[in-house]
Length: 166
Image 1: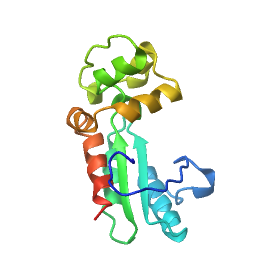
Image 2 (image 1 turned 90 degrees about the vertical axis):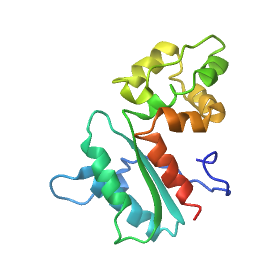
Image 3 (image 1 turned 120 degrees about the horizontal axis):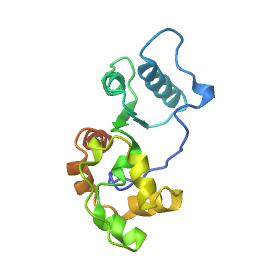
Image 4 (image 1 turned 90 degrees about the horizontal axis):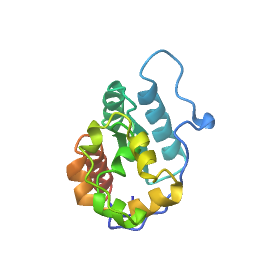
């Protein structure tokens, strides 16, 4: 997040599935409800903005639900809601130069990261499933390359995060 914006950020992290912030009851639209619940909670806590990201995990409906929550006019809090396609792990595969540097061995360009059905498995095969390696890849990867290689998930999310500056 800090690499996407030019202003200083104070970040408080939490899990989307935090049991204290259960989504509203009722059938359907679970991630829409969860995103709205998080937005309302962040507003109540006095946060300036909410950054919220989930994996698509093979469920295209999640994108529509999160887009709907992003566009919701009932809540004033600035927010950047996003869906990683298929999962956040795919973003780690966008920059083979960063992977090569972190892993200390040559890594080939991965096919379109968002088209990989099980990116976590590819990350595991490459040996980057450790948290410290993910952080190192994130620290050095080329953000603009990631935007170009992951246009469906990361590009949309990155634009929403950058829009928080306005």
